[in-house]
Image (cartoon, rainbow, N blue to C red):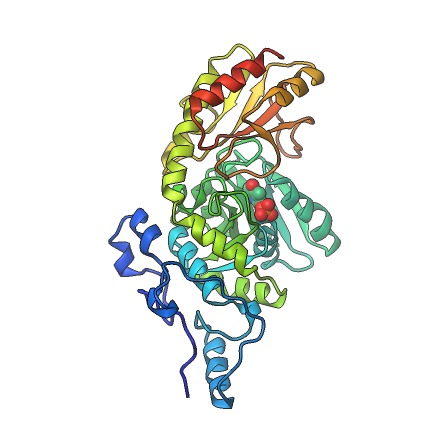
Length: 414
Ligand SMILES: *Cc1c(COP(=O)(O)O)cnc(C)c1O
């Protein structure tokens, strides 16, 4: 009779205490990224946990099945039970992300959006109320406004810069305050500790979309967040070739999230999980370069006559800079650019003329991207102060001098 098949990692996976991982805790994050959640002994010496494909998991016998059932009932991580509940490929990435975000445990979903929605809806039932930042990722806004409304769950949008003022919007039935900082379209930095303090005093959970900073540059659980979501599609995967989301929780919020995710059949395909784990190994190096390149391009842009405002929280004097400096450990490569008012055709000509900035939605890969907003950002609780068009830039790993040359040539069309 074999014990339940678990992934034997440096840190014990059967430990249900918070993921403090004393061995790793003494090491720098770069060392964890290289060495964490690898189990070469388990896989014949391979450096990376391999892609493990499974629906059915076969049990040795009835007793084996009973023992695994017991482990599942006691919420032990890393138990092979059925493919949907994960395999060693999944467990390794979950363990990495939980550690990096500083949370208790992590579950994976097939996209960032699926993760956002799972985290948001796990805590609400008919008659409940959600407070959501006005700067939230568009599809999350749509889900709250259209889908949750259909189930009798009301959402009030709030000014992302509200801070402790959120208190006056909290109702007796407010269950979730949803934050995204900075907003991935408009880049307002939120006062998460102030919002979390109010939320907890009123028994509400704080759910955060932490995609912009990645787990390396913002530590959600040190700032009072209960559940942190990553669109791993972005920086964690880092190569624009997989879709994946993660939900990481405090110990206190874990059971509700776990039950919700499992009952909805959310899981992630092993190839995408593998690609995310592979991307994660180089996250620190890539982010450092994205940060440096983006600041160089943003600094150049801020001095151009065609530019009204650069929305980059790490740029001194830019909106949200002081809060960013207080709470974040770094900045990624995504920021906004408000141009001086121009004709729609001039904007289109500018975008179409660029050779190194490709037009597309996603970001967080090694390549530079541009996405103009043809309409003003959707706003319900705050006003958008700029008249000119908003353009979102993702600065990749190219030479910033080449990127600036490309933008300079494009500006001739404005
Ligand atoms: C891209 C993105 C998502 C959604 O991720 P997908 O994997 O594309 O579904 C969620 N939140 C933010 C902030 C994003 O940028």
